[in-house]
Amino acid sequence: AGRLVKRIRGSFAQHVAASRAFGHLAAAFLGLGQQSIAEELTAARVAFQKSAFPRRSGVYAWTLESLADLRLRHMGCPPSVLLETPRKQACLRPFLNGELARRAAEQALPLYQEAAGLLRMLFGEDHAYH
Image (tube, rainbow, N blue to C red; front, side, top):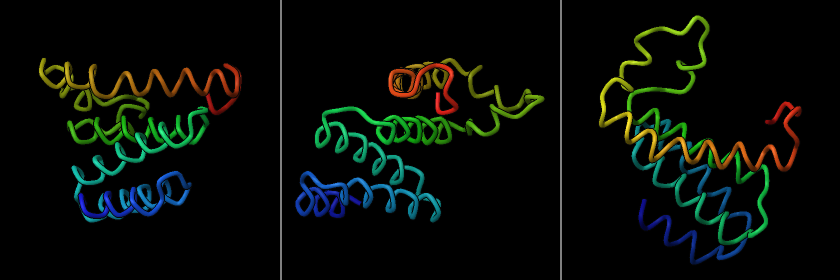
């Protein structure tokens, strides 16, 4: 994955194709069960979008959400399970582990907060995207 990231950055220094390439590769590696590589590529996509396109966008916010989702999934707590109603008690077990709860609070929640703030600013609180 490291070689791919270098090649993308070298070929598309400030081009939307780099963002798309990171996204497609992350999806491919996720489909292959390579969670860590998918997370690394999504983090590279976030960093690329932040530096290449200084004005924030919905795409950037949704990429932040994707990275947070990947991080929670990697910790053993897929966001889709957290959103189920009624919520299963088992989905909350990872958060009872102090280390996992700390990692979620440090590595995923700030991404969700930034994404929500951007979506609120871009679309308003009453919009479906927020």
